[in-house]
Image 1 (cartoon, rainbow, N blue to C red):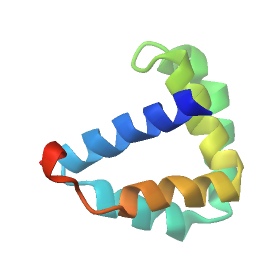
Image 2 (image 1 turned 60 degrees about the vertical axis):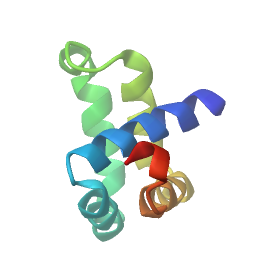
Image 3 (image 1 turned 120 degrees about the horizontal axis):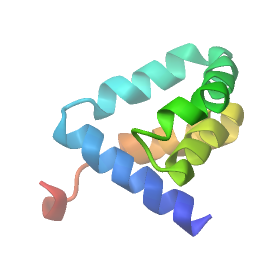
Image 4 (image 1 turned 135 degrees about the horizontal axis):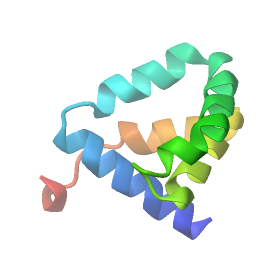
Length: 87
């Protein structure tokens, strides 16, 4: 679980740098039931997507999309205010 939290924080930091943190949280909330479909797309596309992301990140993403509670936990990470150290 600790590795997943580290991966989530890496994603949150990257999305924050790109200015997409709030948009991503809103998008995940709005998709709701379609997140499960997104997880299946990640699983099916894994051979191609491995060229862009490490397998551990792809697995974490698919698991995040599969489980509504996990999705909500990641949204909470995205909704956290930025710390001065990351700014």
